[in-house]
Length: 370
Image (cartoon, rainbow, N blue to C red):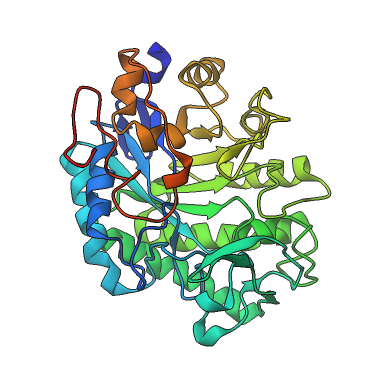
């Protein structure tokens, strides 16, 4: 495991180890998008000296939400509650980036202004489910964004980054993976536009690059990360030439001085490992490393052993863990000291209060609520 405990420079920061906490939607925020008081405890429990946490997906514009209980950074009222979270992480010597998220067509009229239609690059059907006050229901058919609306959303990325800075975040991660809005623009299975944001790969990548530029204009490019999911199928994603598409995206991003590029391996769909691919090697990292020479964070189905291996091979510089961080708030120390990992309970992943959220003890601790 020694590979996981070498320091690494990421943007302006030096992390003391290479085990990152992946962004994990837990659906426990208030109706106005403010995180609950419990969230500061949750993130503080999982912070480690010199380690990176990427926040759960956080909607950055009105209408960008698709799931009941997701936090936002689209309004000033959310800043102070996020500040409690960043303070809790910093008190442990950790770092935290805010993931800027817009779900696009993966939404419902309930989450939209005036009950309108979700937005997307094109009005392509999406058969997925979203979480509302009525539980998991079919998404509402989306409409295509107008050019001026895309320009407005680019400005929302800038404003959201300003709020993230005010809330004390060390950086932001632009979410362009998992079939959400920016990914919908990237892939031609969902993008049927014939204007400056559709057609060629260059055009389909335009919105992503503008969103990155908007965030960087506030916080600096070396404090901006980007998350992509090459060949991922979550959210009904597909592309006619995925290797060409994501190679191009990696080459474009390689010209910048990003904090990192965060890759999701296609062997994982949602929170379930795809059984037909669970033995697959990390193909996304292998592809992208050919075109991207900066810091790469790999995520998706890793064990401590496979995490150490991908760093040894040079295909990634850090590895993000998700499910294991839920049930092991002290995950880096458990891995460092070869302490068995506690099992997670899928039934408590989404929604609820402290059960399955803040009641997992660190090794050797007994929490009152546990």
